[in-house]
Length: 317
Image 1 (spheres, rainbow, N blue to C red):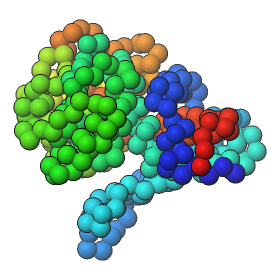
Image 2 (image 1 turned 180 degrees about the vertical axis):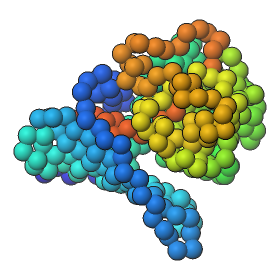
Image 3 (image 1 turned 120 degrees about the vertical axis):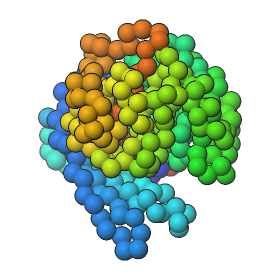
């Protein structure tokens, strides 16, 4: 059995290869039950979440991810998300590998956003606004830069010190990054807005979105969470990673449906339809919005890529 720690998992998930692996997996056949989602009480703190995400390719691979989300972990200087991924043989059931679930999640999530942006963001989109300062912030910069000519990056967060640290990390990788103090101003200028937060109330307002912009919503993953307001969803052509996931958990979609602002038909397509070329951006001035809550096939695609890369001897301890 192979065990890949955070560093090794990262080394096995080259951005271009990972985006390609997701593209292939969304085009192919993968069995993907809707994930299990359990609320875990934490005495004296915000409730935590336990996620179980299975997926398999018959006769090839079986995978399951176990993830815990503890929103108040920042109080003890720990990441909010912890997880592990178990990859098994689809022929024998033998456990093949255990991967760092947090790194796999962060990288496949950013890669899925980039894959959607390849079909939805304008070809000339060059200004990226990242909303949020967690581990995904730099990943989103790296991934989007693989599919669009990103030249100018702005990071916004409620904590300016954390935003500065994220910007420093991105600059170390060669990106031109600044920190925004005014979210509205930054959003009005952006070609792509990528949000990765645990917000329970809207951050991005529809009135701020310029013609031709693309909004990428990642962080809010329950019915009670959201990163955009009703106007943003109403103005945009909306796409999701999967309809099953979005209609079960995505507050950014479910709340405006519940209030009558949009109907389910407002969701144009899911990512599998995008990568197959059935739909996409229709014009330079339209606003597009991609909402993801995470799909187990994304983890499986990343885990297979990491396992097979490691088997080829492409990493070291």
